[in-house]
Length: 446
Image 1: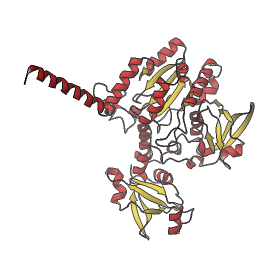
Image 2: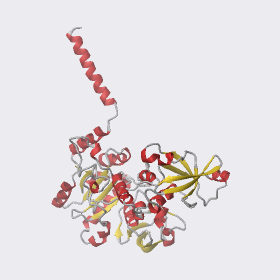
Image 3: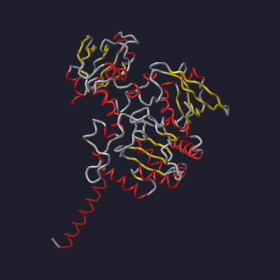
C-alpha cells in the first residue's frame, strides 16, 4: 500500500473516530466537566464559589442570586438553560445581581441554605450580609414541573427581590423569618451517613460525579440520622415544604404568590381567600414566589396554629388568618418525592403501592374508607428485597397494616412505618391474594 493510501486511511479513521465520539451520548462525568467549562468560559455566572459571590456582592452592593441545581439534571436544565441563554426578560434582571451557580451541596452552609431537598433546582435571592429576600423553585411531581414554576414566574421573583433590596435595610425585620434555625449538622458531609463517603468539596482531579453530594442526599441523611438512633422521623422533616394545595391553595406559577384556585371547605376557603387574590405577606414575611409560601408552611407547627396573611384583592388590602388543625401536614402527598425511595426501604421493605381503583374495590367488596393498596412493584435487591423475602408478591392487595385499616394512601404507610415503628420490628400485614386473605410479617428497617 502506498504512502498516500496509508495517509488517506489514517485520515478517514480519525474522521470516523471524531464522528463516533460526537455521535455517542456524553457520560455523566463528561456532562459535569463540560458544564463547568461552558459556564466559566461565558463568565456570567460564578461557578460553584459562594465565598467569591459574597465578596463580589459586598464590593458592588448588588444582591446575590444563587442557583442550586444538580448536574446534570435533564429536567431542571430545561428551565435553567433557557433562563441563562435565551430569555430576554430574565437576563436584564440577572445582570442586576451577582449570579452564582452551585452544582453540589458539599460544604454548603445548612444554617443559611435551607430548601426542599427533593428538588433538583432551587434559587435563593439574598443580601451580602446573608439576609434572604426569597426563594424560588417548587415541585409536586417527580418529573413534571410546568404547573409549579415558569420563566415568567422567575422574572417576577427576581423583580420583587430587587425591590426588597432597594428597600433594605428598612425591611430587615420583616425578612428575619426567611432564615431558619440550624439543622442537625452544619453541612451535608458531616452527617453520619455521608461523612465517610464525601468531603466538603468536589474532586475535579478524580471522578467528580462520585464526589458530589446531591440535594436529595441531604434529606436522606437527615432521615437516616433519626432512624438509626431508633427515633421517629419528625413530622416536619417527613412532610417537609408542604405544597400550598395542602391548605387548599392552587397558586399561579407565572406570578409571585397569586391564587389560581381555592379548594372548597379548605383552610384557605375558611379564611376567605379567593381566586385572583395576591398574597403579599404570610406570617409577616413578604413573598416573591410560591416557594416562599412553602417556606412559611414548612415552619408552621405540625400541631396546627394560625398564620396571618395579607392579600391584595382588586387594589384593596385585606388581612385574613389561616387556621390549621393538628395533623394538617399529613394531607400532603409524599409518595412522589425522591425521598420515598428511602422510606420504602424503611417502611415497606421495597414495596410500591397504589390505591385500588373503584371498580376493583367493588369486586372485592372493600368499603371506600378501608385500606386497599395494590402492590405495583416488589423490590428485588438488598434492603429493598425485604418484602419479597417475606413473601409479598406483585398484585397483592394490602387491606390491613399492623392492625390498621385506615392507611388509605401509599404515603400513609410510609409515614406510619417511620413514626410508629422502629428498625427490627416485624409488622403483620394482611393481603388479599387470589381471593383469599394471607397475613405476612414485614420487617421494619433502617
